[in-house]
Length: 377
Ligand code: SAH
Image (cartoon, rainbow, N blue to C red; front, side, top):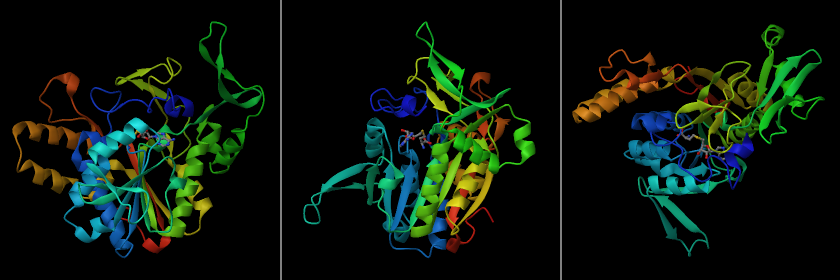
């Protein structure tokens, strides 16, 4: 899964822009500017709770086209003290997407020879310095930190296990005689079994007993530990939004190409692979990594951005827009917070906006000093 998505030569994310109507799938920041704006409200509220620090590392994991941060900076640009505290760090493995993020954040590369030999890059949207990194570990620590991960965890590689008469076996990918890929079951314990055993410890016996398949995501556990430790040493918090469950995930790995589900093993690297996020495992990993952090949620995306004020925002935007923009605002609003098909839709049946407000979940990990973050109280 990791190779298929991030292999430096042939990985799905590496050489192309996969987002939007022309691409393979669409995400919330691409649906409406209101999404990034609402995340901006959350970040600003946390910054207030942190005591308005003068310098904050705002880290986004897997920023895609950079739309979320662009909308956040535009939306918050009037709040000078907040905006001036930010240093944006984008954790992105794809050189193509890094370029797109540079463009969409309207970045300017400045020669800053006086201070150091390095170039400084600043987003002209709000005068904010921006840096890129391949991993979270590479982001310098030592300043209060706010981390956003939207649809990042679902791209981390999972391991699938199946229960058979000889016990739990890992599903592996094999090459068949006709040179095509196929799934086989391991004949003996694999290294990922350690993570399966760890996951079992966090689950009730009844939860496991009813399952014949289980997915575990060691990378998600490790990343959560890194996040928790960073927040414990630097202060601040993280917001994780993704589709998933608040418990063990059984069998969710999926492949999407051009907005359609396709076979997982078909033409690897040409379709997005993703899996449901196991939020319970994130909670346990964070709590295990540090006693200084508290974990909140998951709540639904609809609860999150509803409480952050999306209703007020959509009303304001609707007061001053064309008919076409109004239609797009209403359907965008529904897709972000609604549940199922939009009841107000009058257009063609095949383009009815589908609400994702309850399918997406949000979880916060914060330094205990910060108290309970909004709107998780
Ligand atoms: N957050 C964006 C994009 C989500 S897609 C949005 O909501 O629109 C996943 C993003 O994570 C892409 O930018 C992809 O290139 C990046 N990514 C995936 N795996 C990664 C990894 N292991 N390390 C760094 N970036 C990764």
